[in-house]
Image (cartoon, rainbow, N blue to C red; front, side, top):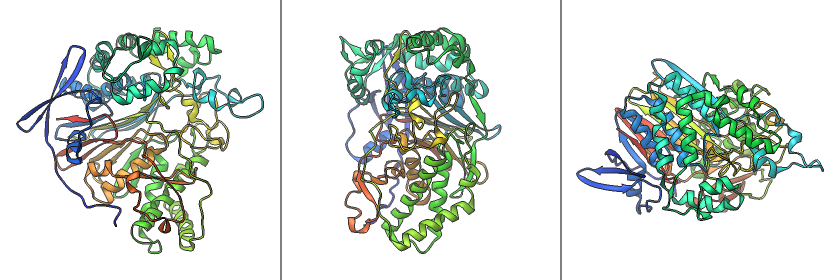
Length: 590
């Protein structure tokens, strides 16, 4: 039985009319001549049948396309596009909107990365990730007995880094957008003020973390002193006021405005862990994207401390192994090649990954031909000998659907790929009173101690140790692929913690190498290995595909791949958008 099924092409052309009715947002979709009106909320019942499900999560347009993790975030992008905005305005509108719509995943007190490619102007990489505050030092997270305080670094006020989301979005929009920021933020303000129907995923995680929420957070996400339920209206008045202040004062609000004052006041009860000085010293980092030729395309992704370099290594390793004749053939050989490439890439990440302003990350070496050949030679020796065993029992990292991604492209190839996060589910699970904003828990992305895993089971080295002003290592890997002539081919990224690089790899491999269509490539069962734990994770649909006697080299564990891919690709004069069917979002465009 082959791991890869044959491809089937069937395109659905949709014309989208976007409407708002009072406090309940809806979307009107026309399927050919048949009109269908659906409540625009992820509480929509799951459509049965692969083709119908594909109809919801795949869209083809010609002018522009956006793929996000919530229909209203995609709609926000469409709104500003219709007002004359460009792809950067679309990205900014969707970013502010998704912070309202998926507070469990991202927010204005979070951070992220973005790759911007404007063929007639240039290409840029932006790091607006959270930074360790001045009081963020390793000893702060050490217990009296010398052991690591994993609870302190993963939840609560001291788990938050200095946020950069607002500064980053505003900087990118000011440099490359066309519309006034008030127009760009307007959809997010409306969603916060008028509210939207709570969808199943949001209701479930609110209920899950409810006991750990502080009173301000319970007030926003509760009704009658109990967690808000699916289908009920979530109104966020304090968040609306925060967004209003940003629309009026822009970046000044995030330096010495009312919002930062409220955050600083909150932290006076917590040793002033984040101070006025931290806000004023925060800087968005602007740089050239990391660029490499991979699989016949020019790949633009984020430099460290993103994991973009390790994604490139992974892809180059697989390409080199495909040239060798010594590896086993068929589905088992394919699985071994991909798994071993993942192990090497994640080993490099664990041992070398970190903030390049604090540690040397040998980026050029990790994507060089000699290094790739050397590593494949070692893999080849091991595989041919057949003399290796897994070193650990299977361990499933904590399940955590978080973070968010936005992919945007227009017919001219202008594109933005941006991943944003507050890290874990609802971050620190603490809301700053009067702001409607949830704190991130990004300090957990640092290596609290060598060998001690974080929320995602990832380990790190001293290269990712905690230090004031430092940016933690991140799995986020926003990516844009260019044709050899410079035309934009594809915009891709994903949320999902440690599964982010492998989810992007899986999708690109099926789409570009296996030649499946885009929807099949996104929804196809995935494999994942992150070096430690030394476990091969397979989607449940692959169970039975590989008899244990054919994969004696790995500890295999079946479980749902946590990442969700959001991608836009250009095929001829068509723009194809796909939002991962594991999520709530939809692609929208013209």
